Image (cartoon, rainbow, N blue to C red; front, top):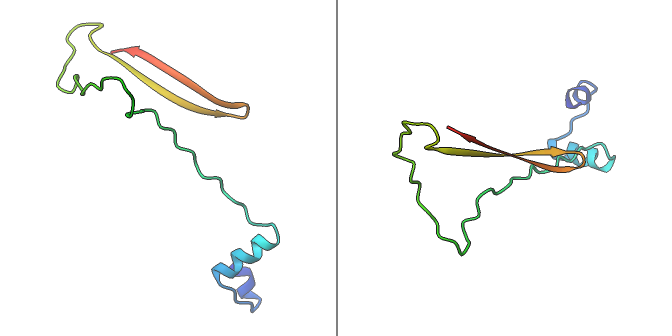
Length: 86
């Protein structure tokens, strides 16, 4: 749009352009992305250190891993919990 205006001899700065677009209701306001906190460290339960850091499983069923995925739906938030063996 700024190129179009300047080609017609009109000069306008960035801030003035944004103000003009907002005034006319043409400015799209982006919603801030919501970040989810999946670990709550401030609780009354015992906190364990990472005990599998130096662990290499050598047989089945020695190590379990899990993943939580948040999916935004039009009806709300859907939480998908994927627990699996490694």
